[in-house]
Image 1 (cartoon, one colour):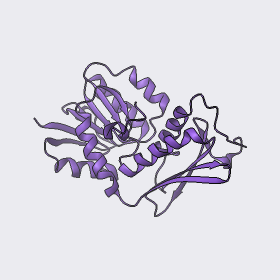
Image 2: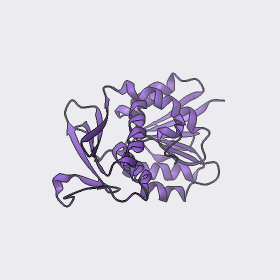
Image 3: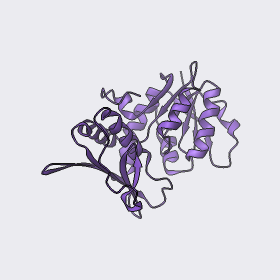
Amino acid sequence: MTTRVAVAGASGKMGRLFVSLIEDLDGFEVTAQLGSGSAREELDDADLVVDVTTIEASREIVARAVAAGKKVLVGTSGWSEALVAELRGRVTGDAGVLIIPNFSLGSVLGTTLATIASRFYSSIEVLEAHRASKVDSPSGTAVRTAELMAAAREGLGPVEAPHSDQRARGQLVAGIPVHSMRLRGMVAAQEVSFGGDGEILSIRHDTISQDAYVRGIQLSLEAVRGITGVVVGLENVLDLGIGRA
C-alpha cells in the first residue's frame, strides 16, 4: 500500500530534501508540494503531511491535518513544550504527530548523552550555531535538549545560572542558559558544557551537510505511519530508552 504524502514547505532546503528522499523510497508517493502561497486544501488528499515550514504556518497546517485524522511528520523548529502540550489535547482517534527537532542521528545521540550528564552537574550551558538565514532562536534542538535535561534533573534543584538577568547571558530555557549564533557558512552545531569541581565536560555535535539528516528522515517516515497521539524526538524512533514523549 502506497502512502500519499503532501510536503508543506517543499521549496525550502529541507522540503526539497524530503521530496527527493520520498520519491526514492518504496511505499511512498509525493502527491502535493506546498509553498507559502499554496492553498491548504492541497493537503486534503494526502495520508501523511510533512511539515517543514515556519512555526506560525506549522501550527495551522498541523491543526488542519490532525482534524482530518491524518499522520503528520513535523520538522519545523519552534514547537515548545507548551505548544506540544496544547497539541496533545487535540490529537484523537487515528491521528498521529511525530515532531522531530533534529533529524541527525549524531545530534540526537548528543542530546541523549547531555541528558544523562545533566543529572551529575548543576552548572550547565548550551551554545548553538546555525546558518545566518535561520530566523528562530534558540533552535528547536537546543530547546529540546534544555527541556530534557531539566526533566532529568527533576528533584535535584535548579541549574546554576548566575547573572541571568543580563542579555549577554543568553535565554533561559527550562532554567538553562542557551546562547545562539547565526553565522554565514555555518550549517548547524551544538555544544553543551557542564562545569564541575576541577573539570569541564563538553558534548558537541557538528552538522557538516544535509547528508546528516537522510537516515533520520527515512526512519521517521517509516515510523510516523504507525504513530497515534503525539511523539516528540528522534530518540523515540531509535528506541534509545530515554526521553519518552
